[in-house]
Amino acid sequence: TAMEFFRSLVSNKIVGTLLLGLIILGMAVWGTENIFSGNFGSGVISVGERSISQQELDREFERTLRILRQQDESNRTLTRQQAVEFGLLDQEISQQTTRLLLLGYAREIGADASSQALADSIRADENFQNQVTGTFDLDTYRRVLTNNNFTQAGYEQGLKDNLTLGYIEDAVVSAVSAPSDLSRLQAI
Image (cartoon, rainbow, N blue to C red; front, top):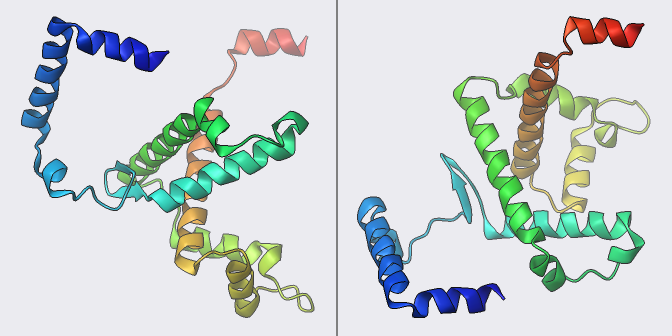
């Protein structure tokens, strides 16, 4: 197993010394104050100004497991421990890190969703509309969020992030086009 391999590496005096040296070098370069103070911040994953808390990561991981269980009959009994052993937690961490990187980049270049785009998206969502009038209803909005265990700030940040990521996706897709010769060949 991987743990046995790691133990055999560390038991080798040269490799163990090299590994210890790399750790000391890393502490010297990036600092050690957080390690010894116990202050690791509030986020499990941090990129720039944004971070994801342990609770948010757990919620996203559970959502991923729920989707997997619904999509495939054989995954209905997939336990959290099995998912971790299969590397699904590592994939979730990687996806969330990539998400934060993209959001940070979008913010840096000024491509993040505006407050107006956020408001328009919320008003257009049928889940938040009054059943009689068909228009946005603030009480319905708050009730739906509460029933789904969302805070207003948390929901709006998530929606803004999704809109921003949609902008990035649209920009990438529109930038990719088939060469004209290939397009003509396909048309023929």
